[in-house]
Length: 269
Image 1: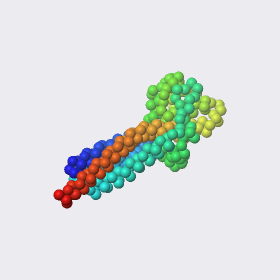
Image 2: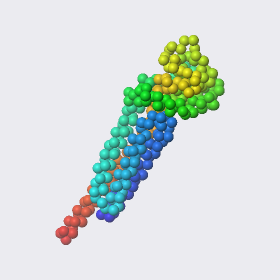
Image 3: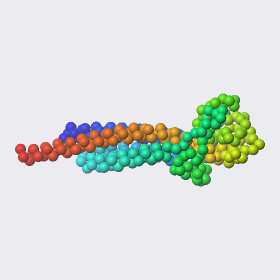
Image 4: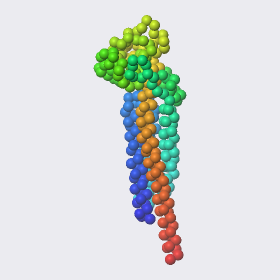
């Protein structure tokens, strides 16, 4: 029985270690400028990781110190958390399955359209109140200023692989026909009524295209890329957690069988 309890404790210690990638993924998302402005996914991921850590710790204590009710709590709670983690993995995949950039003639960077993304993501940026907060957060970063320092010539900028956020927020959409002066300063064409974003563009460095739908789409494209990376980490951790959980269930069952067999021998020998 002691050996089985030690095995259960060791298995739960592994489950504790598996909470680290989940918490780490949440912290990584929180430190990304776009995710820190939206504040949508990072906290559910961090909270779920912390809960898995706490439950695994309970199982670890219950295994080594032979506390049956803690082990039962671990088995029930961890099953619930694994289901929640699986739902989160599927949810992230489903809301990021849509949305991709579009090539424009003579441009290496991509353009992004808001309607290409899932309804869930679009609703996060369409509310004027929400977008005002996000917009103020984005405009306080130096992501657009970096472009001015890096690209002086038009052709160098057109050949650049800038981020979706920079493509959508720091320059006017290519279809507007603006003339390049520098990455964040463009000369307006005679007719710029091709799209509302063309009218929303401003050479004022605190405005730029932060009020454009292209900026919202660029933000969602950035979120999609980062969420997909986090989802891969969560998926790998989920598979590992399921394996650890099933192994723990088998060890717990074997421990109970050994205990019953020992009691049987003591009663009849």
